[in-house]
Length: 299
Image (cartoon, rainbow, N blue to C red; front, side, top):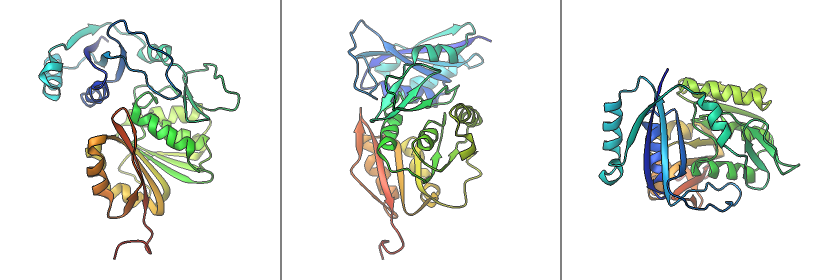
């Protein structure tokens, strides 16, 4: 089956938004590369390098309506971005393997590594998540996922139960389990994400401690830690469900939030949670909140 691929060249400040926009339009994968000839020095551990002019490519199923795709992208983007949109038809390839060829091991924090296949890790004491995302979002390359992984690397997870809401590839739940969490629940509305999570959990030897469910079958018992790496408007809409999953005194970690959206997200949750200072990267933030116990709740 052929595939549809679209390309956009944008300033690096706009790249994360365009990447998420293509995913929202139904892209099965999104890749970023240099649009010019800019040298790229080795980035610090866990950081995502972006070129000043970044070429972003989205891969779509072959039966995608090209006119509708062009219209949808044009409506989502400012006119000065949409004019350089290119769309082409590609012959079938093993796109998961193409992704693996381009994805190098990455370190998050002091000890957590994410790698494809069996790539060597220059850290004998590193904690490794072996990842093949399939067609589900979540590799660690996006700033929102990187913020969550670095937070997990610092967190006290020993013997904690956690929930990964909107699990994508399962990367956060699997990382938490490998960092010491006792059990995890991975939740997503996308069956492909649940499949990718199950395969990645099996690959990492944590499937026996991971429950994988869709968003219509939420756990009935709250847990000490809930992570949700989703877009801001979805987080706000899910506020009652997410808050209910956090045990009194527990923690809620929210990502997928642009810096200018942070106040709106905090306001949506602040009746029951108290947030610390946002952590920021490339215009995105991670919000870390504690749910008040009954004794601490405002009267």
